[in-house]
Image (tube, rainbow, N blue to C red; front, side, top):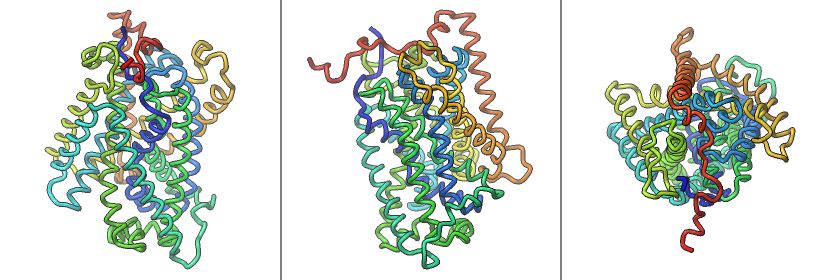
Length: 482
């Protein structure tokens, strides 16, 4: 029998939880929104979130349609293999593994810096503690992780809602200003950086659910969790950014955000009581951990699925069960080992955990995922009829992906062109352009590996993207005790 992930173990709500937890609303509020205002000085950040979320949602339509039809845990790998060719599939799979690892590992820097600031100690010691916690949870059954993520996500959304009430309830100018939604605010010098930050803030929400499709109770829920997650979180972040602008004044929100003494967003929460600030700090720490766990789970599934097809070493797909895998241990252990090495390198080098480790790695990951989402939309438009199915609609297979590619290309161009502001590099520095160069090199390396497999191991090459077990090859969780 074929080895597969445990079927019918993740509900539609569970899919949405993983996507939302990966995006981490508390992290976006305390880091993304404040940092974007401070760096770009764009007052129309709320409207920017709306525009970016709409564009990403269009891109996610084709991605979700392909993920639903193929049911492959390494979503981008399977989508590109079926829509553009096997070589593209391997390139996309390798880029996805690098991008997800970059985002996941970047958060060890964020967690370590946050704990060192609040509790004391060295950032890399705290990062090591988080690495152990995520590693232990990562090899457990997915249901256990879902419960932990759901509780932290609920608390995070509660804190964001309280922040919005505190901000809108006490506007800085005595009246609610709608400057954050004025279209004229989109034609300013810092808009490219704002678009890049918004895209990074939504990373994870638009592609995480697709990696759990083999374990989903209903494949159709992948599309709802993906697109719904982008739109819901885009709306949440837009409202949160709007409330921050109203709370301190849209004309000065950039300057106030850039001042560490302002204490945003916690100073706004303190208007409703100091204990809200204390709770928010605790929830932020747990939110970082759950985001790391969500991305860790995605990476583990990519490694498992590609190893199952022997594109990666087959030993990474081994498990204690001959047919049913409740948690991909090989991929999980590999991701933990990679994270430990990278954190160790940054610790030894003495690099700043926030300005260097978190910022650069998260930017690399967000850029890589946007490139993959664009490629997935192209794959949806070129997918053969055997993949689209008999009820393929023009909207999800043609129109939405085409519109998404147009809008997404603009977003990607703005992200690459404004990588310097995203990374805080000096004007004229060439270092920010290392990000697209790294991604291109990784993609080329994946293509070369696919070419090697085609020449040396043609049977492996023929199975690229096609190793998902047959419907009844893996028993349902509900039938195991019968």
